[in-house]
Length: 214
Image 1 (cartoon, one colour):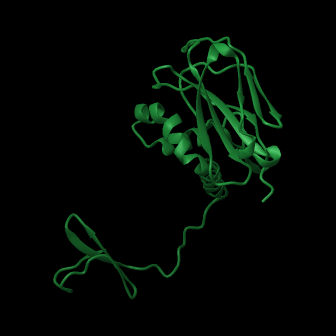
Image 2 (image 1 turned 45 degrees about the vertical axis):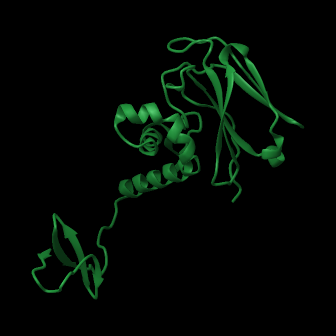
Image 3 (image 1 turned 30 degrees about the vertical axis):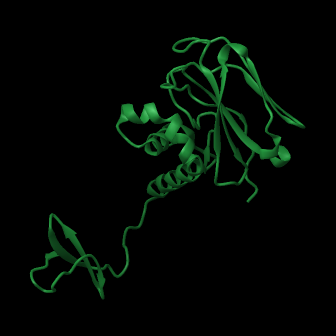
């Protein structure tokens, strides 16, 4: 690295032939481009790189959802919501099985928080919508007026949506007239609960998951 002193009227930033020119602390510097990188990775490093990639690719379609469902977690960790979710995935959801790196879908939380999540829940795809049912019992933090949130994604799509239904936990069921969103029912669906004052979330619970055929 070398400091640039009056070599150019304003070197700015960028590349010039084999030089990379950049600014730091108000001064301009340059360094030589490497001919090639010599950072041969060990097997463990390659596995870690794969885990990073799988985690990011999995949560990328949910980035707008995560801003809402990881908001409190991100605040406590003092980081972006996407980073908080990515960190959770790496620690708990990305696993190695039979030499392959995969996702433990039950640990792949798209919502994270202290509220109680139902131990039992189910969905049924019907011609005109989706029937949700869940156990109304709860323990720990939360109450009967926590409301249902639905997170869904079409298989292979890079977009997702979240529906805050306003339906309280104590009702135990909800019919979502939404089949137009989900052709062939190949839909990945999670549920979570949000506090009545909209400040806290529960962990998510996966109810339907299809592997992409792409």
